[in-house]
Image 1: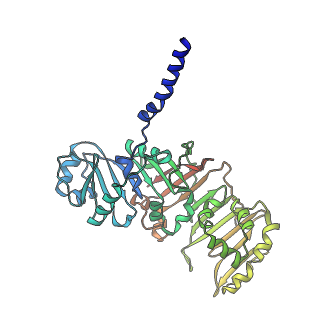
Image 2: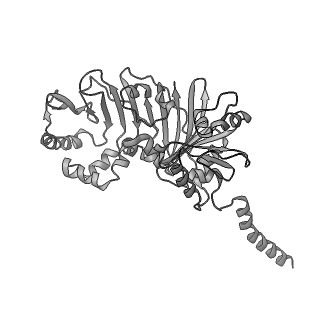
Image 3: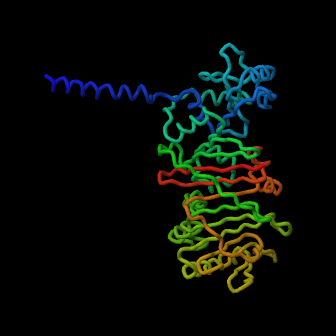
Length: 410
């Protein structure tokens, strides 16, 4: 009898566990902020400061209701950009159910959403009526961050709208989120991103704090990484691009694979005179060295001549290409395994760069100076456009996630 009672208790436990799991970890439809995240290209949390005047988006969307709602209490509120980000942000806030709805507004659960125009309102309301699965993995963690404090979430559509034609070089950051904090005048952030939407991988370990490095006077941007496929992965995902490189320049898949495994340093340097606003330099440490790559660079000469470029070899180790007497770019061997590729005039004397050793990549740029030269993507946030320096560090993990950290200096 004791054995039967034990068996019955075990069966009851096995039956009860799934029910308990569903109660603790429901897998129903996404609701509230979760639903907003799923329909967002960009979604940012803000913390109100009732002592300050309401921001412009409150005044524009809420009219006479803005001031009393803003000053009533400290609260979280959100800005949402849908896939049509150019149409403007949707204001999201929690208001009493009895409060009158402003123009172009509708309610979703506890939220009031105020769109910039009737079309955005209609499209977003229709999308939010669709049933969506409960969030998991990265999306679940991002939703929690958006509920807890200042944070920003992006999808592939949001990244594309921010970076424009540069989006393919950020293919490993297609969906992600950052928590934001301030320290004196600096804006700090940390978070994670994934190369594809809906990642269920565990959260990556922290990216740590980027090491501060002073900029060289002319530098506008500096990107260091352990593998060139950080930049090439998105570009080479296109079969037509691969085919064009093979047909026009003789770069076969094997050579591209070897190239993509090279540690690199990419720099953009300001030019005060000449035909170019800036010069681009890409320094590589090639595992196969000069003996493998010199013949392949030699094979590029005729295709470049066919495009109207003229070769003016400056030194024994440098090849400089020009058009109409104006330097367009070239390459230079800095050592038997260090190759410098450049666009624009030939840079001055350079030593082999120090490459990242820990698998991380680091991006440093000067947004204010890039903006002055019209080299910054136009839809970058105002805080970024006004910043003197931006630093972003990424640490990829085996699960396909990238841990992120960085700061913005005014």
